[in-house]
Image 1 (cartoon, one colour):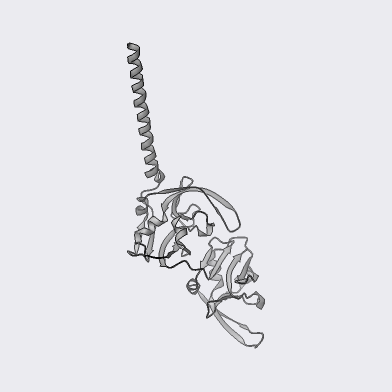
Image 2: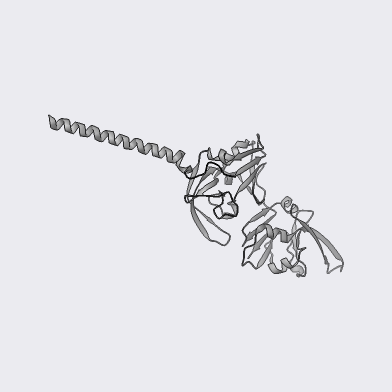
Length: 298
């Protein structure tokens, strides 16, 4: 009889212990899903995103607003830079669609022009934005609201090269219609990969120059966005030596960065049809690439 009672008591105790353990696990899981992903994040941070072009915009979504949203974890996300180096990391942050939704989305096909705090901007498709997060933690480390910090807050876009991973997004413009192809791309050994529209090019500092046409022997005046200002925006990396200019047809020519820097009036001309051509003084006419579409720094 005593043996039966002891056995019953032990069984009840074990059941209660198991129930308590399960209850603790469930609580911990909920905390991990709701609060655990946000652990270590400060209550306040000097970071916000202004959104325009939506049905209820303009709106400014603050860091505090974002921290109150549901967080998402992306594990084992890899990206490749312009020279083929891979990096892998775990990221935690707010889904970008949740942030953009605060401005209200218009009906139909839309794209998004996102600008960083330093003015660098890119256009994202709906598909790219849908899978992106604004990351506040990388490999467990809290990221900083400083575009010059190696652990800066960043847009993480899975399965995209790192030129689409924008540090310190500051503004999002919702645009009706699909994302347009850039008029000019600047890639290669740069800290900032540029994908510029004609309007972006026209917004750069403008310079003027001239050359002598070999056929007519007449002086031709030209003007356009400063090539040196363009290179400054791209932030050329140390060790880079040349710029490779490539046209739509694949034709390309290289000019040394030293020669470009030696000409303060080096420029990109914009034709009436929107076609681009590079010009650097004292360079052979063959280095002027018609229908220019990319500049790669090597």
